[in-house]
Length: 482
Image 1 (tube, rainbow, N blue to C red):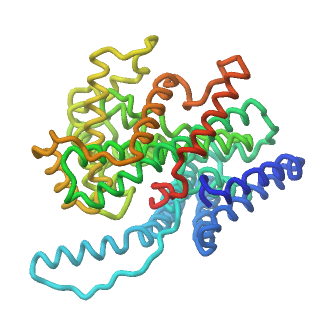
Image 2 (cartoon, rainbow, N blue to C red; image 1 turned 180 degrees about the horizontal axis):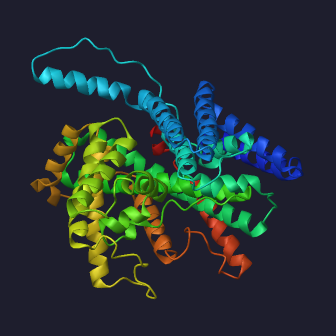
């Protein structure tokens, strides 16, 4: 079920009313209702995927219980075996559905280079929606139990709710059990201010998805699908449009997810912090897909030694984390190259010790950035756009062909203009202006500081009118494929 669909527009208010007016008296019943509607939400695509998610959830819950029992009896080796087994099992399920054909094709290609042909057949595997997200969420629970950062879940219904919670089920944020699971244990009462802010965040997320991302997608698809016939300037414009498409698409989803969760009394972690206002690549990654980058930091980078060892070990760990991040995004060499590019871009900051330099808000206490900050933002954005070319291209060869065209003399020609492109550019202007003005807030429509009710509601209605008039609805979210 898509957030930007009629089905969800009907589904959400029905669930909201039943949740608060029918099932609110008993917490266990309310949690069971969340599990039920979450499975309906997920099963809307294909009910068979429910079995897979249910198995992942059950194995992780059982592993947490067994780990703590073995630890309480000082059988540390048994606890480690259970923990490792659960990790391997979940990653094996993820790997089969997401990477089996990739490894087979790569294996065949490798032997072909040496003049050997192999008769290995790929499989017609349907990738379950959001499998990477809920798998990582389940894994974090069992790892945290093993590390004794939390007690195992005693209530299996609450745990099923934690893994399957429908607002963030298929595209994050990737929640930690230490944050989300305890919220299933506590009685929830309706909080008007929380719900009102949730509605504002949903509205802003819909604007980013339907108006910004989906309008950009129209031209991105046309340009990248016909890259051989486009000038360097047009290809560069397509890459810039894709940068805003993927941001509007993914951060828009996160806004809708976080806002929807607030309607039901839950607080999810922030997933984006206006990343295109970053002054270097390190700052960009502290602000982009925060739930995933912190997941890799806590469960891979730090266990590998992080930056505590030698400089060489820090370099090694950084490359590992970026390449794994690229591989997480999909079974294509383009994603691995994309991760490698960001690792290389990160190196000068790491080697100079400046990777934690920009932890403050840009242009603090000022409306406009300084000339230096503007240059830093522009350069960082240009580097990010360069990486996005590999992310969007069909394969690595196509990406290099596009880059070669961008750096040819055709870059000095005017890009191809298409009818309707003006509204897309205008929507980008609105996005940038609003988010720059609201960069100290949690989202672009956190306007509770405006005391005039008339002004606030006028903004809401104008935004709704823009969505209805200029929205290019109907497209799926990009990150569903991951």
